[in-house]
Image (cartoon, rainbow, N blue to C red; front, side):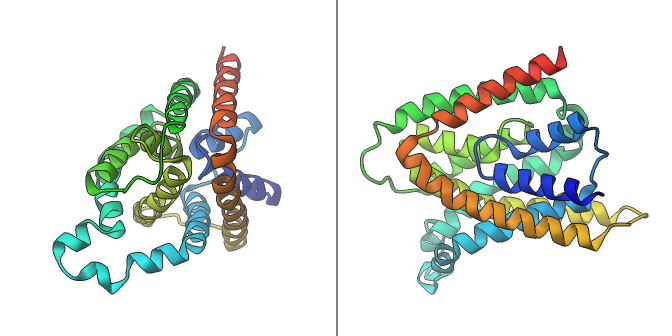
Length: 263
């Protein structure tokens, strides 16, 4: 893989993983438009690992608090703690992603599906953002609310949906502020990315011809980490002031461009 390809793919992954615009859609489309060969599973894993390190580093204090001994007094306290809520919210996507990853890979990774999902879920994001204006004060994240957001995450298996986009949309519809929605979405990404990487490593281990370039992997991890960290920091400061409209407009524009490219 050429260095420029490694850097561009890592930058796209780091930039789009946490923005509500779908990282998978951009990676698929970039490779298709530029005529690049598939970069391979192990490279995909390395890019996701870079973004995982970024979100863990950014939320290190929150994560430390999650594993505080005060949450482990009894089962009820554990389930209702932030750690318990995120664990319960993660179960739907882990189950669905694990069972249907092959079907998704074979049937949904098309420009038509990406364009349709980009536009449709962009409209949903707009509608949820309008509701965010009505949010007053902080809403407490409960197990049931977290599970509903986790259920919405199932839709993220459709390329073009955006995992962060659909979870932020669901949280906004449930009455959370933009900042609260974004923070929960990012924290929820941690177990999802870990689960996805474990599945990817397992699939990679089944391949007989395991040839890859360590320099590409390290460069991809480094670039995706830096870009993802800066993106998270910028996005959380940006959305409370400006809202989701710029991302909605971008999604609609991108969807139309993809349709024009197809036809």
